[in-house]
Image (cartoon, rainbow, N blue to C red; front, side, top):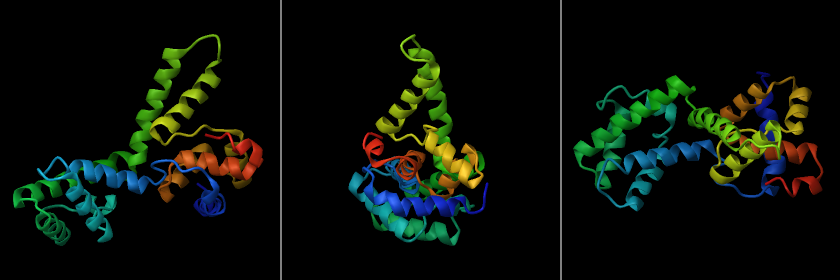
Length: 217
């Protein structure tokens, strides 16, 4: 991957991001935090608002970062002790807090080992499988496979924010300018922890007219 590709995407985000429509889960870091919430919510019989407070506090302490969690080898580490202190103060029992630490650490390790530490790569893998299944299921003469693939990808982006790319002409132009492949652009987006649907919109904003951009979503 070209070494400056993430920088160019960051520049496009700063240039065009404020003018683009809001869409849920543009930040993959926030999507990871939501997974942390859902896991913790099953570890203790507490109100969801309390669990969200726990996630926010741990996030502020930089203790729910995926790579950080993956490095916790036991409940006796310093990081585990801080997480346990926060959870117990908010109402977790000691047993539930320790169980939560082991669960988060395990999930972090699995995501690190199988998906390069990026939860969006897990979603992309299964999203591509779902997209291909949709194309196979809904195939008809009204659209060719390429059009149906685009429509299915677009729907999965809009309906459930899956981190897929539409591979528009603007992505091809961006890759050509910077000597990057589609895989390179996806990797750069993952390094920035931004949803690839946002990358699609940023590139449309950069390489198409405002009139065309109005109908991007």
